[in-house]
Image 1 (spheres, rainbow over the protein chains, first blue to last red):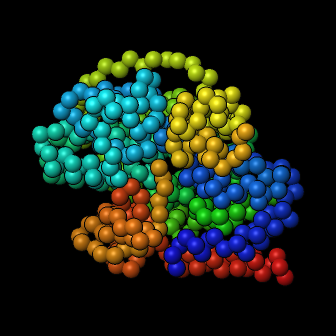
Image 2 (image 1 turned 45 degrees about the vertical axis):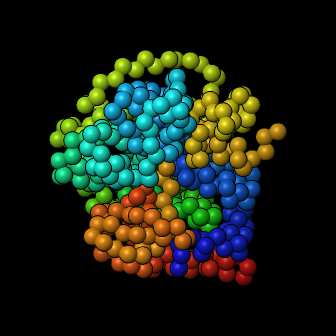
Image 3 (image 1 turned 135 degrees about the vertical axis):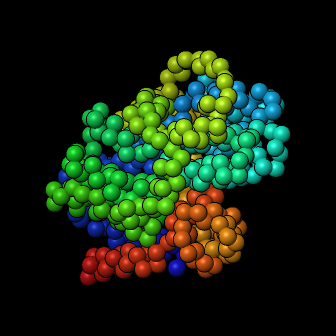
Length: 361
Length: 74
């Protein structure tokens, strides 16, 4: 059992596609809110296996895509200040700030290094006590516990040159915002790796309050098609609920140890999502007891965000209102080499994914 | 970003493991998972094991897929 190839069996996939075609009885719109799902769906060509009645649309689940330009501007300013290292995930490097990307700031001399985990950023700080190391904490519930463990570790060791600038976000409030805005959907393909931490019960409010189908699923082609079949059956039988396809890692209650670390270190706060605005309780900030490690508290940076209207429609794309191909900049003024919007930067961004896997002549 | 991969645990040293993703070796913090041993599979995300993979549930999903296969072709 390798937990990968087994869910790529062509025979299972063909049968699932056949089954889905047999069971459709109307039109269906399902939204995947995880950027990893968006990438997997298009990489495996899932839409081409579905009948025209079933439409999959992408939501706001790419953390890089929803990181505000102002946050990038702050990191640029911090890293350019001297004596400060910004140690961050590589995903952030090419996200446009309002003036510069971090890649451009690094080329201009800012000390920006790529790490694979929060823990590696802490190790950089431990190895060079004379430098202040800032870890930009991005990501959803999947990533936040790792930051929390690292913050607790730094706190216990009494490290005084390691700081976190939290832009962590939480998924359920963003899903609810879309529903409150009236996005027309029949169900959600719920984010599998967020659910590993939160448990599938985090999505119970969706069928309960909004009467929509929910399936928590994995990232292989058979997982994705089985989820679509389960969603169609929920819609057809008018019994919306939260089901879990991804049972090899997801439970009802989630990873309670990880939740404990998150609760110890973070509290919920109203947070800006790029393209979506301020989402109530949509993000995580460090609790007061860790404020000595909070870069937002310990550093003062003046950021003058430049508002410019390039015509980028990332906001509408993140809401599932339009597809990337509907944006006039797509594949012209905006490409992965020269991204205008964050959705074109990340490997999990809708625009980047469409650019790679769809025709756009 | 939420990319997480099944990884086979090679060695365990306190709260840190070496894990293999298709032969590429990474370090994984084990603070969030209990009782991990060499040979186990964990879900690796941004330097941490965020969950152990459950073989019985994984096989159950495959059994369901086989059943669907039988239903359609039968």
